[in-house]
Amino acid sequence: MKQAFNHQATNKVKAIFDRMADTYHQQVEAFTILGTAMLGYLANARGKQRVLEVGCGSGQNSELLASQFLSKDRGVLVSCDISSKMIQKLEETFQHSDFAQVP
Image (cartoon, rainbow, N blue to C red):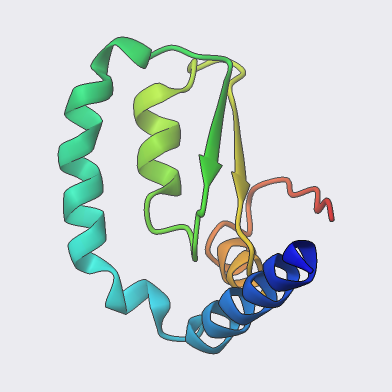
């Protein structure tokens, strides 16, 4: 029963973010400001080969994460989100990037 509840909760959260996908990028400016401030705490994490971005949304912080923390020559940003519509928005924002979608 607990697993079914978790599945229901996950689907509900996914549906909420799917509905928000078209306007999410504009709505999260405050989170972007907070995210930028948090980057200062992560200063020693610079120059990495791979960075995992969990809950990437429409990509509002993706470029900043990549530019601040990835190795300039061959770093990879792995972005994931529960909402497939948010991932679509991310792909639209970064059309020049390579994407591989995993379930």
